[in-house]
Image (cartoon, rainbow, N blue to C red):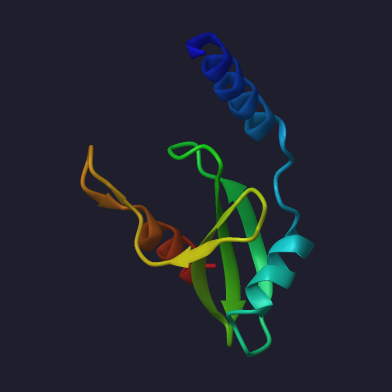
Length: 101
């Protein structure tokens, strides 16, 4: 029984790892459900620090907004992502970068 459970877990991890990243178009469609105004998806990148989590930068009224999506683009969250190791606010760093552009 333990071997079967382990095999199923390994298969699930493999399939999650192989699934494709969301496209900008998928991110746009998903975020439309949350953001009722016109916006542009400026950037979509997988976070190296959190595999399987994607950082989406959108521009609303010329202001950058950072959101996070899972691989399926079915789940999103907004808020600050903090690195506990060096106590940096990764979300604020991205916002500052896009404010300077």
